Image 1 (cartoon, rainbow, N blue to C red):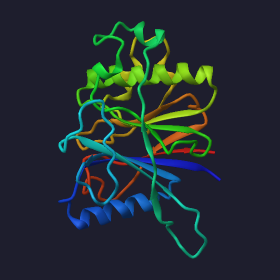
Image 2: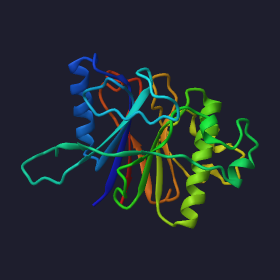
Image 3: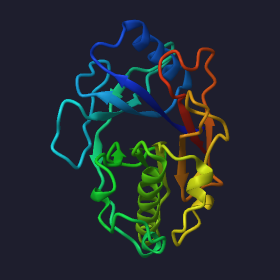
Length: 240
């Protein structure tokens, strides 16, 4: 049986979001029947899901948050199991020789590259994979540096501690630009994407990187009204 993880940028989902939008988001997410789900761009006041403010800065009500859920294995005739909130752990990536080879501006301290941290989902393996979510900085060049930094760190760490890893999220840089990074590993070999736009403006900003690119596949969700509930389309990573 396949395992899967869905990710979706929810475009400032908050306490004032219309109930119809929340219902629509829930319906689309439930239809994917993923083992677990990760979200970004929730406000701190969000009530539809539990917001996690994973930041390196002093927390404020204006910052955007993550959320993550999984599903209990409930017996038939329940079609869609009831979601439960997953823990999210702030990650502090360390610089690596591979990252430093690119000569990016910003130095060796990841906290200088972005305010928002990547998060480890669930505190343990999801279907045998270590899953990390990330909402990268909005500017493509800043996002490239941040995503490259994390990918180099994860590859270095899991070379010493062998295990599958998946970094998935709104990476805010298109795969082609990220693949051209001058870091000391070929990021193109780690990128898995749908090859389709995931943002309302026609860009592919939501995808993943993994050290098991032949085993983990990624697809874009096909919804009839794709941008009715967010300016992003959800994506799903699937593996055996």
